[in-house]
Length: 177
View 1 (tube, one colour):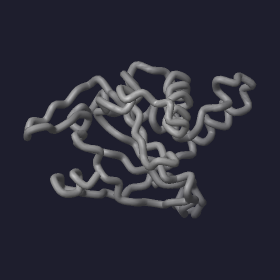
View 2: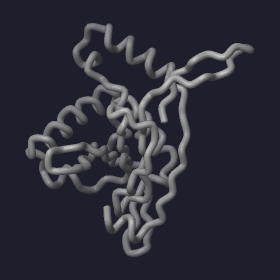
View 3: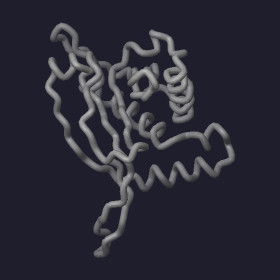
View 4: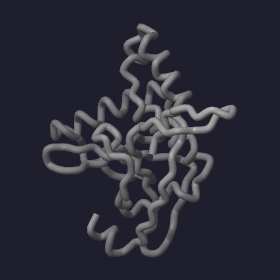
């Protein structure tokens, strides 16, 4: 992280997104009775959406080494995981090819492997993009540090209700930052 701060331009753009459809879909999954689907989190859903978007926008899915930028439509999606020993960033291989359940399965395998120190070194290498989500900690927005040699990172905050004008009335609508 120190190298990233010292050698790359850090730029943060803050935006919010309406998550009504995601929250509605997650509720349907939770009441489905299928254990595979009931355990899917909002973060799993975000990782799934990001993987699909990155395969269509490879210009931000890649690495830079020795001043050479390499991009790919194959998504090796890393996600930040807090552990007793500090931040670890495991990689979901070929995330763009996985189903939502497949992404959720990988986060449930890799996250605990990090916190219990069972993660394999190869599972922490080769990421082309990182997502870091501090929403569960109540953080609205923040400036994530690029996980070099990657060229971009997405920092996700919590879901908040914000006022939105809909058909001449103001309604509280859940948005994620």
